[in-house]
Image (cartoon, rainbow, N blue to C red):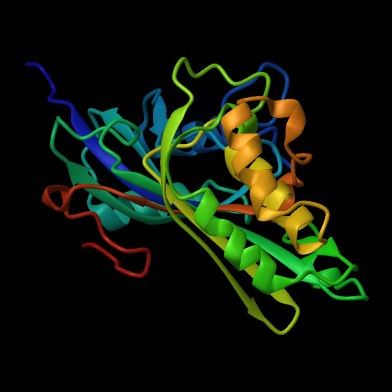
Length: 262
């Protein structure tokens, strides 16, 4: 008798500080490795997980999505609670749900939304250490907001990707780029169909320089058109970045992070 395979999707959040990133690496602690070990324990078999995207070392996630295939039979809550039993405190499964065969955490995604946090004040806050980028020079939030429009749309983002980026196509559609400030905390959110390696952190680096009046809006247009990474600002630190949300077609009916499925 052949045991049928089941595809399970999970929402997951994690603090990326002590990890080499999402992807498995030899002799390094990865989020993927820790999660695979936990799921395999619950499934009583070796399981490989696939995520919506790979986050770098030090980058966090509030709404990462993964999937895996297993012959084990568990309820949604048994998956969620069981996996969490075997995870450290800095990784948490938010929900689990049985999915149709055509679901793929990466290929089925319509868009990804990232959030970047900046603590802009003269004094550091120990509770935001490794959770937000600290900048003690005053940032001009209005200039930063006005600069956002230059990034929106379909562009060749070669000037804003890492030299190690392996994507064959540098064309991306940036759908949303917003900046908000509440007291000392600046929040930058951006949504795209997909992102190039370091694309968000490089864009944030430029927006910071705009806020410090080192770069103007006209400079941004010139930098994008030049398709030259050396002309753009430096890459902002990893610890301010969060994978906030991944959106999928409605037909998959994925839950929000605060829903428990039985």
